[in-house]
Length: 138
Length: 478
Image (cartoon, rainbow over all chains, first blue to last red; front, side, top):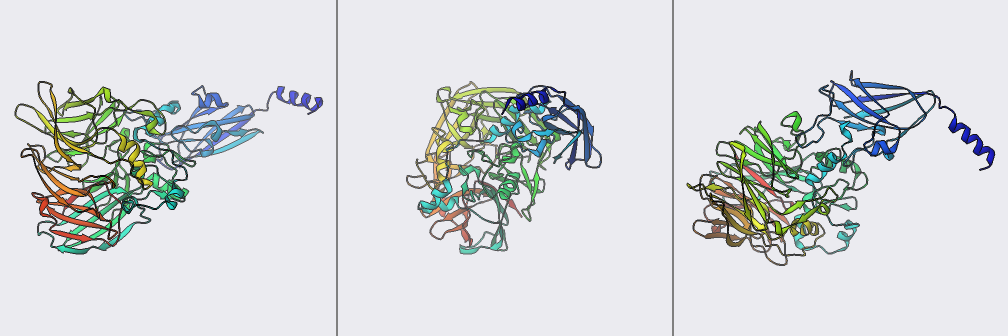
């Protein structure tokens, strides 16, 4: 790579990224009630290491769907962890052994394998004016 | 968000997963190696078994014996060049042996579990289990995704429950054997471990436990199978347990020193045999689960215990089938899937007595025994029905016996070396159970007198198919 290209790349990285609105559409088949609670992450360390999400939301379930919008996101890679708060109490239901009792899902519909899907399987690109992703909770 | 608690999922897995040996290219090895005759006991059943009559070999069904023997056991171990790594990880096949009008019939249907659906779609064994590691394509969002529903089947509240030990019971239609789905006894108990050996009181009330490390959840169900109460208790150690027992008044939880020490997969890598710690027996008052005492015994390893009873002075007695290490669970049961039998099993029938002054005693029957069943409930001393005759060179039992602890006397029928003897259950005055006839390559059904099995079968039937070795089952009278 020559110096001119490097210089251009540096400029692009330094420029403020255009704000993007991310729309997340949930298809819900397990129960028609409650809300979807989700956390949005913008980096692997926070996502896989139990760190702080960049945004969180709770959106109502209606007609088997729920839609969450995150305006003003910087372009980049993101991942989502979500659960269906069927009883609407604002928290993940737990058994006496501390196991989840309400359904959950991850972006890209990445499967759980003995734990939340890792960033490597669940991250997706957000860029342009608008971005969209869909997650099914069953 | 609490979904970040990765350890939660880990625990779900670990609750049910057992030892594993690395066994890459296992299926290829299976095809290449000459299989011993007994490998029929771990053969694959490719599809449900449509209802069919059994052929009568000899004898007549007793007039007072009409109903259905339901049995459950793993029956699919290999898919698309892959295999499970442990006998306990095959898909559960519920079998119904129906006796009516002097005739016998057989039907069998796989339990429609999440594990079976995932692996059917994948065309390969991918889900982790008791001793099988997760492979590419595994989906484990909860313990029930690994639930093989392959260990026991009981009748409660007009339905059957196909049981495993680290996840939900699966409800089954007793007539069609169709799976109705995992049972959630209360919304907050979804997917909770429910051991495969619930204990039933004379009243019909059902007790069970579920395990997670040093925590146990005590289930109390009505005779109709509805949840009456559930309570969390703490155990003396994070022991692996397949069974517990009880008397009329007490629950008895035998904490053997095969301990869950680390959250790691496969499960065996997190389990450790600590014989120096001995065995701690937790005795709990059923009327007040906080009223407990602990007895100490030398290191024992067991899968199955017999029903307990109490003397007038409060001394508790129960028997069980005890080995001196967990090697069957951690190694032999894996080798069996590969057609190997590296170590002769010697599960010994022993009686444990717990005196009110805190003393604990062990007594030996002097015989090998497994799959104990007891007629007579918890009211007092009762005989133990068991299989046995374990010997070198071939796994599984060859005999059916009745051991009387009071008289110190055995009554034993030897089915001869060409038969593998599975669990027999008590059906009134009779014992009913199955064998695998290795010479005929067929499953057989036999009825023997409960008072004296040595008299031999009063009636025997043969199926036109050999089903693999089942674990446990229930007699449901018509």
